[in-house]
Image (cartoon, rainbow, N blue to C red):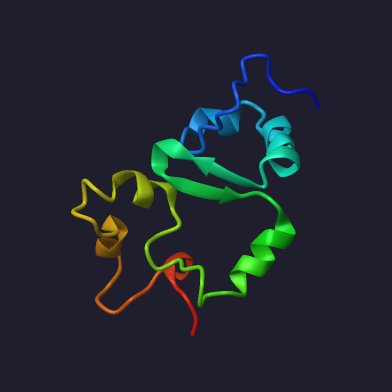
Length: 103
């Protein structure tokens, strides 16, 4: 599939419109050209290859989910005083599995 004609190499990962406008050609480009895609506006890295995601998922000693994996956590962390604002949604001591490291 060809890339969209307006594609400039930046993938707006936090923009819902991006996902509604056929993101598959861009995903294919990312996997081929940018398997570790640095998204500067949110100072984050997007891992695009399945084998890399599996390898990272097995290395909680190096890679952590504890500071949030949800884009809004990254985007609004500063406004929330440096903490994950979604923690307020869970009962005390509760955890959201997407923000949990083993064990």
